[in-house]
Amino acid sequence: MSRKIRNATPADARAILDIYAPYVTDTSITFETEVPT
Image (tube, rainbow, N blue to C red):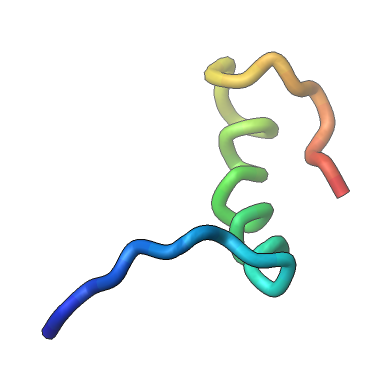
């Protein structure tokens, strides 16, 4: 199985937000206080 790294596209935004959201709501890793939309 080969893997490829590529730049994110607008179609990836929802998946990226789903990954990022728990870090905003459940940790102090980011200075954000609300999940971006």
